[in-house]
Image 1 (cartoon, protein in one colour):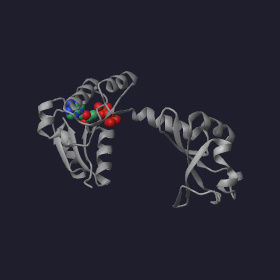
Image 2 (cartoon, protein in one colour):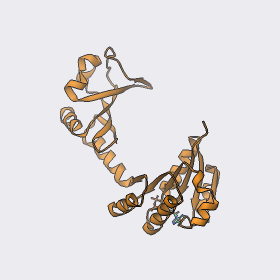
Image 3 (cartoon, helix red, strand yellow):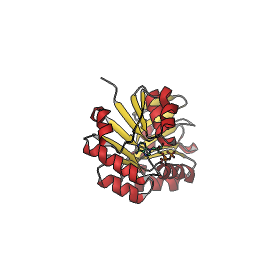
Image 4 (cartoon, protein in one colour):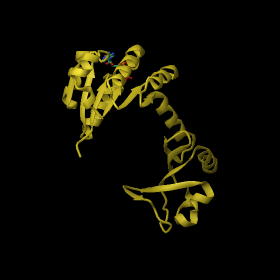
Length: 219
Ligand code: ATP
């Protein structure tokens, strides 16, 4: 299967980091900015880098914008430009648009004009870090939907040497354990017979409200 093609528009710290990482992950990445210095700086780290004003629909069309599977609009401080670019991509028929927002009003507008996904990196990272520091056993957290989240839990001492069956996670905590991380190994979909060891990290999916219970338990 052909690699997906990504276009990253706006090469501030966030956009440049996304573009370089996608390229490292063997994706085809075109990086775009209105500032020629930003375009030159990233040239060696992406497939192509192009200097253009992304609010210009003609320029986007000439770039073959509809050939890209995913467009990432990473323009934060110039809200007007961010909205105009997202709208242009939508009107030109780009199927999957991820737009970066700077505040909640900006988020609402981007959602209204049809961004597939709106991210607010500082906010999202803040939430994630807060979740991991409020309980030292919660190492990482991802919000899957309004209702569900994925967590990585460092098991407390009293879970060690107990099997998944004995732990009875579903009944006791209403969580589904999808994997156990042990040193460099990962046990995917552990069975009832798998036994937890000290230092194991349990990767689980649960409802938000049930995670609150677990946090209280782990404290
Ligand atoms: P961060 O550096 O934290 O990611 P940010 O998202 O606020 O911050 P900005 O400083 O807004 O980043 O930079 C976004 C980039 O988008 C800049 O490099 C800017 O030149 C570029 N940019 C702004 N308007 C346009 C446009 N119309 N077309 C293409 N690029 C643009």
